[in-house]
Image (cartoon, rainbow, N blue to C red):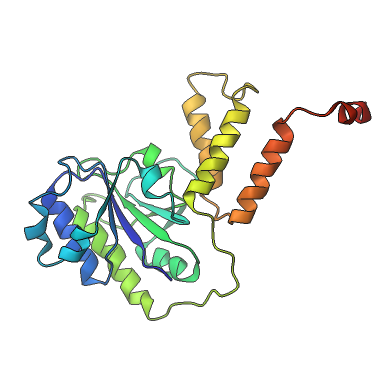
Amino acid sequence: MQKPIIILVRPQLGENIGTAARAMLNFGLNQMRLVSPRDGWPNPDAGPAASGADEVLANAEVFGSVADAVADCAHVYATTVRKRGMYKDVVTPEQAATQSMARPGRTAILFGAEATGLDNAEIVRAQSIITVPVNAAFSSLNLAQAVILCAYEWSRHDATLLQHEGLDEAAPQEEVDGLVTQLNDALEPAGFFRTETRAPVARQTVRNLFTRVGYTSQEIRTLRGIVSALTKPRRPEAQDQAK
C-alpha cells in the first residue's frame, strides 16, 4: 500500500507549507504536492517552519491544477467542514484511513487555501469528503492542524494494513477524466447542455457521477466503448436491419 499524497491547493504562506510538511513527517508521510502556491515555489519561509522536515519540501511537486495533481491517483479525498450540496461520501479521518488501507491504488488528500478552503470545482474532483466534528461555533482549523489529523490516523492504522491481493486497482483520475471529456463531447451536440445558465452545474453533476465510484481501468474502457458505440455513425446495413 502506497502512503497517501498530501496535496495543498493554492497555499498562501510558506510558513504554512513548512508546518504542514512537519505534520506529515511526524507520522511518516513524505509525498507533498502543491497546486498553484500563491508565492511560488520554492519558498524561503517554508524551511524554517518545517523544523527539519526538509525531505518533504525537497521532494514537493508543483502542479498548475488539481486535475493534473490527482491524475495518477485512484481515490481522492477533499477536506472541508462546510456542507457543499454534493452527493459524496462524508467520512472522518479515521474512516478515510481505514478505507485507504483496504483499497488498492494511490490515495490523495486535498487541502484548500488557508483563507477559503477548497472550492466546488476542486471538491468535485474527489470521490469522498473528509470532515471532523469540530465546534460549530468555532470550526476553523489551520492548515497544519488539518494535515496532522489525517496523517495521524494513517499512521495509527498502518500497523493493521489489510491485504487486498487479487483486487483490481481503481482507475487513476486521468482515465476518469478521459471518460468524462468523451461523454461531455458526446452530450454537447445532443443538446444536453442546451440551457447555458445550467450547463456548468450539469457538467459538474456528470463528473460527480464518475468520481464518487472507484471504477477499475477495465470498467472505464468499457464505458468509453459504450459511448463510442452510441455516438459513431451507424453502418447502412445496420440501419436497414433496424427498420
